[in-house]
Image (cartoon, rainbow, N blue to C red; front, top):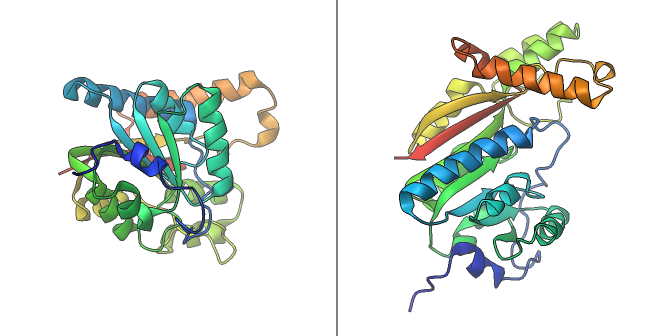
Length: 277
């Protein structure tokens, strides 16, 4: 008989070891990843999951690709959903397991070592309702292939939460810093890099991200920017929690106000919610 357990329970039966799920790419944790601002990104994803769960009348099966230590996964599990985190870093998965235990959610969060190439093994032919892919496409060899693998893992009408690094943010940051040559390079380079020593392999324009999604069988339905000003303000001016909170609030107001849709292209991160066609 087919195994009808949810994906994370089936995945839990496989030991998390390099011999089972070898990491085929470098760990995606990187100091130049777009700031996730977990409260904003996680709350958006949790809200989407709540609406989907209400329509389906049950908790969701969620796949968090490159989910690391579980900023979003734990929030989804706290909301009652079942989450499988696939990440190439054993250290991140160990931190995820500790975090899930401390939150009293070990039965709702499962970590599996691997990457997008491991999805057929992790899911064993089953599908999920929601996939989170945050800060991953910048590092994979083929973003189109990764999105196609995600589409294959989703049930028809399922949702993708995609967060990618934005090109224009680094262009503005370099120009403001007086590094005009690097700003120009980031603007015209096919991968959005400012030079040979740029530690981030790839950045995206909004239309490029939406074109990749369309090619993989998705319809992009909502896009928000993350951190429009936060990466431009010198750290010396953010020496108190009140200052950081005020800047975060200002960023939120910038992206949420009417008539400011153009600002979404300026975020250091572009957060897209898309549905599988």
